[in-house]
Structures are given as C-alpha cells and as structure tokens.
Image (tube, rainbow, N blue to C red; front, side):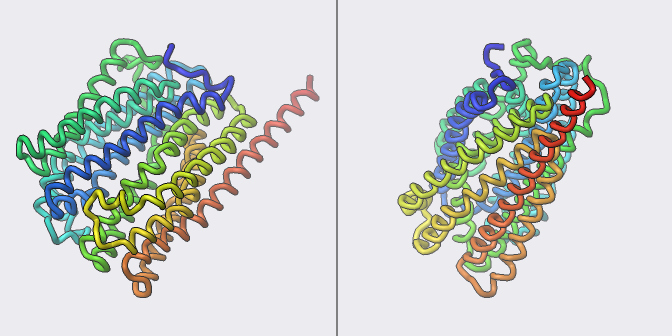
Length: 450
C-alpha cells in the first residue's frame, strides 16, 4: 500500500512519518475545539456553562470509541508484526461488534441524563445541558466508529488518510456551527448536530475505504471467528477505565470549582482543558505513532529498537511541550479572553504557571502508557493511571478547605502527575531492560547449542 509506512526497518523514520500527519490533525482538531467553544460562548454564558458541564459526558463517549480503537490497533499491529494477516481481518470485525454493543448501552443511558447531571451537582441550566448532550448520546455510534477506524488505519501504518479526512470533516463542522446555531436559529442544539453530521461524513468515507478494498486489512465478515475479543479488551478496558476515571475526576473537580468559584470555575476548567489539548496536540500525535510502532516491534520481538523508540519519543515530546508551555504562558490572557472568561486574571496566571511544570510530567506518562498499549500490557497503565487520578481527587479534597479559588485542584493534579510520571518511567525502563536481558540469554543458549 502506497500510504503505509515501513515500521520494522527504521522505527525512528516511521515515528515521524506516522506522527507528522497526526500532528497536523491534532493541532487542527484542537483549534476546532476552541472555535466550537467560541461559537457556543457567543450564545450566552448559560450555554457556555451547559457545554462545559457536559464535557465529561461527551469525553466519556469518545473514551469508549478510543478505548476499543486502541485495543484493536494494538492487536492488529502485533499481528502485522507476526505477518498473521487473517487474524488482522478478524480483529477489526471484533472492534466493530464491540462498538455496536457499547453504542446500544450509551443510547439507553440518554434517557437518564437528568439523573446523571444531578449526580454531577448540576443545578443551573439543566434543560440547556440536556438539549446539547442528548443528540450526541443518541448518535454515539458515529463517534465510536470514527475513533475505531482512525486507529485501525494507523495500525497499518496509514495516518495520512485519517488526517486528511478528519481535517476536511472538522472544516465542515466549523462551517455548520454558525449556520445551524445562528442562521437556522437552532441555538445550542445546532452545535450538537454540526458535530454529528460532520463526524458521520468521516464514518461513511472510512466504510467506503475498507469496502472498496483499498485497505491492507480486509473488512469481510467471512473472516469473523469468535475468541479474540478478550485480546482487544485486555487493552481496551484498561484504556477505558483510565479515561473513564479521568472523566469522573473532571466531574468531581467541577463540583469543587462550582462550590469555590460558582459557574466561572467550570468555565475556567473547560477552557483550560481545551487550551491544553491545543498546546499538547503534537505530543498526542507522538503517542499514537508510538502505540503502532511499539506493537509492531513487540510482535517482531525486537526489544532493542523498542527501547530505543521509547527513549526517543520521550526526549522529543518532553522537549517540545516545554517550549510550547512556556510560549503559552506569555499569551495566556489573550487566549482566555477569547472565551469571555474575564475578571479571573489571578486564576489564569496560576493555571498557566502550573502547566509549565505539569505538562512535561504528563508526556512521560502518556508515552509510557502508549508503549505498554502496543505491547498489550495496558493493565500496568491502568493501575498507575488510576492511582494518579485517585490521588488527585484525594489531594484536592484534603486541600480544598485550605486552598480556595480552585488552587486545591491545581496543586492536587500537579503533585500526583509528578510522582506517577517518575513511577511510569522507572517501571517501563526496568521492563524493557529485563526483556533485553532475557533475549540475550535465549540467544546465548541458541549459540551454545549450535
């Protein structure tokens, strides 16, 4: 396939060939998120609050799709590394079945949104929040399949097609936003349907790409053989639980921020998360590339190159995020001002300052997790990531009576991320060194026998 990258022969070159299109996509998607939030903020502060307070629920849906996609990517990458093509065909079919089942559950939960929002301590703009998020729950299958197919194409070494397609559909979303929100006068529900329609276009194209035979992985149910769903969920479940608990922590932090700052606290948090996604967008692309490369190298038992690509990805991602975080620090007020988050200059200052030290720690954790995902050992990531999130919640709770204005949340997140970044690095380095020593002993025995 002309779009696919040769991963095994030169992992560093493959790292840049896979990640370069994804960097463009990540930056564009981050910009799109900011613009999308900007349009909603022009409606009213209540609409802005409704989108911000339901962000964890939307993130949870994306988490389902990405978790299944990452699990399928890991399995396909390992099977391609082994040159077992029939199992790759079976893998993507299991991913599709998993998305269908998960979507049915999400659709059913849409009818309990009022109760779910009550658990989040949302008492303001409840009807507006439900108006925005209800269509997204009903059409959740669109987002699940989009995430799945992006990951499966990346597993083949093809990141250019998903990048081009998602950029085009995001442009469509940006065009539809003002039309549906203001021209058609649909209000906040217009933002929902703009996202649904544009994502549907991407899913239709992905299906055409697979069914037309342009992909290395064939989409045909004659290859479906029950029994490997476990291998997908070994990676998918830990990823979902990690991201799912992160969404729960978002909900919990929203409760603290509402108590300490009122609705402005939620607006600050939602804006900060969207800006963070823009600042770290290149690093997100690096993580996706490392996942695919690690899977191929692990499947091929090439631990020397696996250790090398882990070190290389850490150096590259941490260096870049430090530069971008410092640059953002000096333009923070202008960026936050775009979203009508005013009269909170002190809070914005501390958010930006913390980011300079926090974001490099996050990159160590992300790259470590993606290597473990590629190896099919996501349960290590699950234990450490859940430990980090739980400690964030505990620290924020303990500090909330002492540190007000949302500072307790910042400090709790920073301390936890620092500690667990160090633990992640030590764990993975020891695992890879251990694999190298094992391979050396095996090779030594083979040589002595021969």
